[in-house]
Each structure stands twice: as structure tokens, then as C-alpha cells.
Length: 259
Length: 281
Image 1 (cartoon, helix red, strand yellow):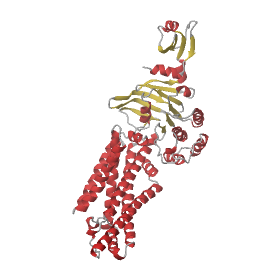
Image 2 (image 1 turned 45 degrees about the vertical axis):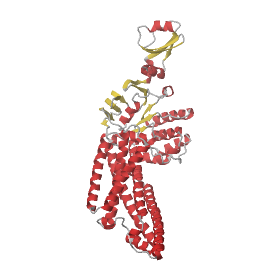
Image 3 (image 1 turned 90 degrees about the vertical axis):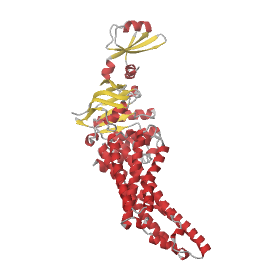
Image 4 (image 1 turned 120 degrees about the vertical axis):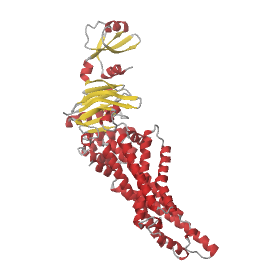
């Protein structure tokens, strides 16, 4: 009962909608920027070679994928924000550690379930929109956006569309868990600094988010990447349990609420 | 058995002994003053009772039930902290609704009427409130919480005299209406002396005294006069402390005044002056 109350006090329908909307906007903006870059590249190739092929190695789509990475980073920030709020509310309402821990775990899962699909579906929606904006000499881009309609990693992820959504959920979960761990760990350090928090947060994004994506991009062992991520999440869960149940985290709330 | 019982409570932070073997009882249906110097251990005691931190050793019971990690029993306690733990991006009226999720007995109508009395803008976000109004928002929610045991940790921080007076008046009215226990931790002892039925004085992590304020004050008196005369009178008596300004000395003596010579003035010791003498180094 108390776990449910704690989760519902933070994850209100408005918060869920706003979170998903912000991520969708990030993905959309970078998709537009990516399309603009790609169109310029098409024009360059057309001027030099008189024709544009579907050889995508000549076309740069890294900006689109940068939007995904940024969205994951934003997800980390949002996920940590929810966790931080949950911890301070728990302290104010005298909620036991065991229920707070359960609520944090559920909050992380909610973040993964909402944010992961929100990022992937936003990418699919953005791709569809981009493909509609391409015609004439830019129809080669239309082919690209249509083919990559709902996937980011193509055939590297087993399970197609659903596999990609599941993978993104895992990535978001890993990021948020690692970020929370850093927040709790910082609590143990005297004079936790905002700068250190930012650096550790970035490390969390790299380890939890970019590294798995990069590994996957260059790896043939996609199941291994999944397994590593799952193990990582399990280890994080254990460490969270120790941090929350055994150690005091009240100083976090003080640090979080004082300037 | 109603009340909060603390048994042999100890809290150490590495080498720092915040509380050492504290045992006391907070009865239901009274107004308490929790008094102590800076760093005495007052907030540590409140945080332990509220399950925000865990004791190094000892036990805490609320209405006869062990309270540590016991959510059902912890519902009976509401703590207004010096630091704000409510989400700062929420408006006051939304913060009240949030607290009501966990404290169903919270009187929302009463909270909003109090906000009107204090001129608190209920549509303003908590982060936009001044120090004084931030305290007001927190103490209104605490008063309205409906909890059986309400702790106020420095409730009047940043409040002007008018608002402080209003808070004390509302506290008495709320106490009369609900019969809940209110525990006020404050440095403004003289202001609260008439409000407090029982005083718990903590010094260096230990309880110095925990009894009726009337008994504390009746159990001591002050003699004031020429230093030489005072020194002669207090010889052999249990002296709590003394102050000397120029040639005039005031001594705080435990017990009842007897055979006071002419030239010395006897007066009732104030709670604040007794507190100072009890906790001076």
C-alpha cells in the first residue's frame, strides 16, 4: 500500500505524459537536423557525380542517432529526477526503507517501460515524417527512412522491432539505476558537489547507454550484449538494496534540497 | 499504552556520539518543548523517531509498538523539518494533497483556512516562497496533518513576531480540538515557555531533564544582589549557575528559597535562564 502511494505520488499522469513528450521532441528535432544535413550531402554528391545512389555510406545519418543518445541522456536526468523526488517524499512521510526500495525499483521499471518505447516509437514516427519530406533527388533518403522505419540497429538486434524496444528499455533501466547509485553514493561523500554529480551522471550515460549501443553496433554477439546488460542491472539492484536498506540516505535529501 | 517510548537510544556517526543512552517517554496529549543547544542531538532524536535514520542501538516504541521500519505505526508521526522535504515544484495546495495521500486524516479545509490567515498564496510554488513563508507552508501542513504526534523542528524560523504569535495561538487551538501531542524543538524558549507543558532538555547527546516545565521552574529560584552577599547566601547550596555584571550577581539555585537575607531579591527562574545554566559548559 505504501509502495503504491509513493510511486503514484511521483509518477502522475501529467509527469508521464510530459516525460514522453520531451523525449519525442528531442528525437524529432535531431531527426530534422539529420535530414537537413543529409539533404546537403545529397546536393554535394549530386553536383559532383550527377547522380545519387542508395549507397548509404556516402550519406551521414549520425546526427539522427545522436538524437537517440541525447534522449537516453535526458531519460537519465528524468529518471533520476523521479527517484530523487521519491526519496525526499519517502523521508517526509516517514516511509520505511523496505517500501522505499520497492518504490524506487518500480519507479525505475516505469521509467524503462515508458521512456524506452517512447524513444523508439518517436524514432519510428520521426522516420515516417522524414520519409514523407523526401522526393525527387532526395528519394534516396526516403528509401533510407522508410527501410529504417522502426529500427535503429537494423539486423543487429534479434527480435526486430520488439527486440529494439526491449533493448532500449534495458538501456534506460541501466542508465537510471547507475545514476541512482551514484546519487546514493554521493550522499556518503562529505561535501558532494554538483560538478561531481554531473560527471558521474555522464559516466552513467556512457556505461549504461552509449557503451551497450556502441558494442552492439560493432558486435556480432547481440545476445551477449543483452546478457551483459541484464547482469549489470542485476548487480545494480543488489547494490541499491545494500545502499538503501543498510546505509542512511537522509543526507541525500538535505543535499538535494539545499542550495 | 499511548505515547512514544525511547529506550537506551544511542546514535554514533563514526567518532561523533550524537546521542548516548537516551531513555524518555513522550506522553500522548501534551505539548512538549524539545530544548537543547546547537548540536545537542535534538534533530537526531527527532529523525530517529521518524525512521529517517537508524539508531546504533536502542529501541523506539510508538503506542506500544516497535516503530523502526513499521509503516503502520509511523503514520502516527508527522515531522516538520528545518529542511524542506516536499517537492519544491509543487504549489502549496498540491503539496497539501500530496501529504493527504499518506496522512488521510489531514484536514485540507483547515490547511487552506490557515493559509488564508497567514496570507500564504496557495497557488505559488514552494520554491518561490521566502524563508518565512516556506516555514509557514510547512507548519500549516504539520498542524493540519491529523497525526497523533507532530514534531516541529524550528517551526518559527524566519517568521515575523505577528506570524509567530499567530502560530502559537493556532497550535493551542489545534491542540484543544484534536488532543494530539505536539513537540516543538526551538531556541526561542521564552516565547514558548507558556505553551510548553513538559520540557525535554538535551545536552551533548544526553537527556538533562524531562519533566513538567512548572516543576522545573518551581524547583529553582533566582537570587540577585551584591556579589558578596549572594556568595555568602549560596554557600553550601546546589547552585545551577550564576551571572555577574559589575558588582551585581544573579545565582540560580535548586530548591525553595529559605532564610533569604535582606538586600537580596528572590524571583522565579525563567525556563530560558534555567536552560542556559543547565547546558552551559
